[in-house]
Length: 625
Image 1: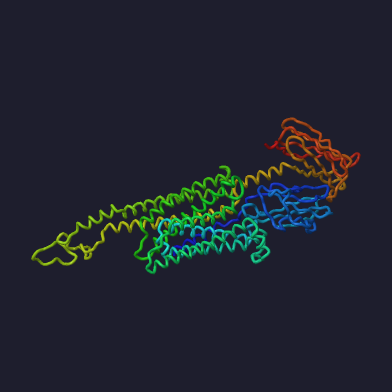
Image 2: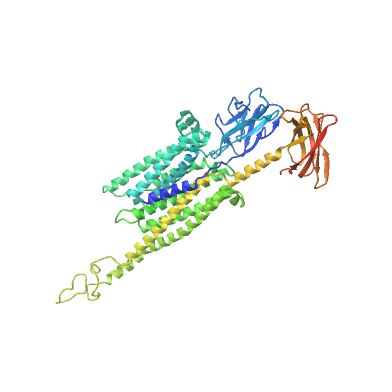
């Protein structure tokens, strides 16, 4: 029943708190830029990301206005840079708006996707339409998220139960509930790992659930970082199964009358190595593998996972023994004391490694309230504080139970029992059984000197009941912490979100594109002028201007003038000195001395006597440091 309650709690938290996961990397720039209008067709399209990415053959698609693919070959890294993706385009491309749809996998194993457009010659009325939803808002994405929760739960049960047997109470290895718990942990971790490996390909490529059995896709998934980590985990689980079976046979022989097996230092070392190796398969393909200080973040992530397993899995093991242990064989107070000390150290490691991981992933105090990762982390910290408060009561009950079972306390109970004696009579009838001269007449039978039980034994039962209640509450809260931790591993870290926003801002400041309509008062003299200002910062800038007719076609005008004024500081007007470049107007040496909002005065002369001046504003940013 306890296991069912815990599983129900996990499922309730999964269904109630499930949300779209975000990836670590983000798109920081593209060439051509989003929304740009090019005079000539480009030879390739290049995307730049904040972190290293991997991609499949169909990760980048460039679609023409007629929704036809114009990149015949798959994407490659540009100039050997792992954070780029580039595709070559076909030879002759017609004018119009092109759509670039992309879906890549970041270094921490999460897919990201998006789309943008650029135009050649002039924008077209139609463009290809692609899906822009969350990569995890699919059947495969949601199923993949649930399986990740199950995998973390299986790791906690397997590591925690094995640690309790190896460190706290070796005899527990022969108790059926503990052996079932080890089996449940191994099966949950193995089954979820196999399912994650099958779904890895569809998860990365946004495929269907049925495509999980596509051998070609599975073969490609195995060669990725995440797929390789899952394969290594399966190999380690196979080794763990052999060792668990061997140890189970030794305990079975003990049930047949043989002495209990001794779990020496070598067994403990092998178990520790297996646990560390399993934790590495997570750290190798999660947030620790990307971002800053990867060399330090990897071992910290391993310690964090192991501490979580030792504490939470050990708690559930102790809870099962306290509630469902074999009749007449309670958990020794010494074993409870050893686990109490071990759990205290595990929680200390959890707090220490958690502080470092929080600093690494959040980056600032402000991000705690402004990002999804930060808000989820605040909830986790609150639950951890509650867990520590409950754990303090568990330690108090443990201390009382250990004190009750201490040799000095036993000696006191023995002396108290010796003071109860049967009166010896000479030549008189023997006192009735269960009664003596010093005992009250209404004393119940069975409380006489022939019974060795002492009243203080009920205090130990009281302490065990109190400990059982506190361990139950602590285990349930631990499950909550585990679920929140799993959600954090699938959420974009705040530091990465900040880098993505900064990169997006840098991209925006790199090119300023303004589209200004103008009207000469007659139907034939209506159109727009597009001004492109790069990099849009203080210093030297390039200005390009293109005039479009009312139907979107290129217009040839005899003159185009542009001046810029910083009205707040009284600077200008500065003449851009645009020159006709046979189809567009340009200047390549416009210097802007100050940041802030500048006013653009654009004069368009369409005939010798017809002209119009329109105004627009643009914000010039300072040079980044």
